[in-house]
Image (cartoon, rainbow, N blue to C red; front, side, top):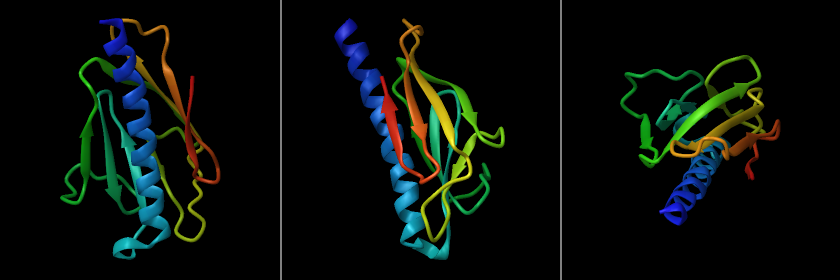
Length: 124
């Protein structure tokens, strides 16, 4: 149903924000004496430890998005597909956004934005 789809979209956008927030707070608390980041793929989001995403890292936490939604238009400063947070401030140089969209109606996406202070939010 349309309602279920809309719910899946909003839930997925909120989930991406929650994962970004988790990476930021892990960085600020210097968990494992490290910084953390989030890597974006078409259908999943990966929370990783360290300054660079490595697919083979066993500490990666992979979150598959709802099958009804996809991820596109990753537009981050520096041109990459990862947001990494800074140890002392929780800020990031990878300022930008990513779109989460319904595969059935891609014309009404949710945009998750990340600011220089490292704070993420959803724009409707």
